[in-house]
Image (cartoon, rainbow, N blue to C red; front, side, top):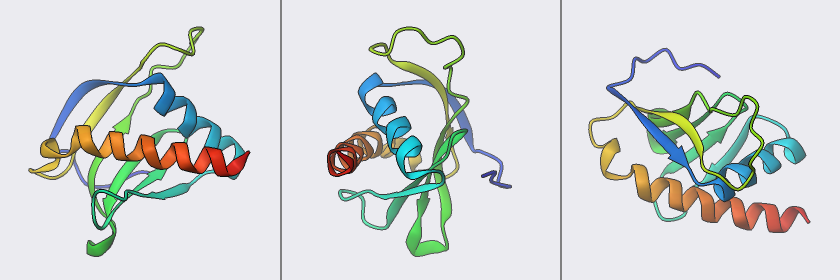
Amino acid sequence: METLIRPWRIFPKKIDAVCYNRGRLALLRLGPPLRVTLRQHRGLEVILDNAEWLCVDSNDEDRPILAWREFKIHARSNLHRPVGCELWLYHSCAGLIMGSALDDLSTALETLTIDLR
């Protein structure tokens, strides 16, 4: 999954290990790409793939809003530590929701992985 739109900004970011591990578990069990609806952000969905987690506006033809990419997982030996990545912002207001969208995704993934048991 590759977006042709250039990002507005790129930031270094860390994703909580619990959120990242739940996302990977869901991808392993259900297969990529996996589409997750964000309940607290109307119209936003995250498309999870092995290479990136792309947050899109489903009300605007899946226009990219932000993406977590370039996960630093090579030789990862501590599953409890945060995972480094790059946060790509595609929308000028994406910075306002980047934290709450990730929290919302974590909650949605928790529900999803509980249902997979």
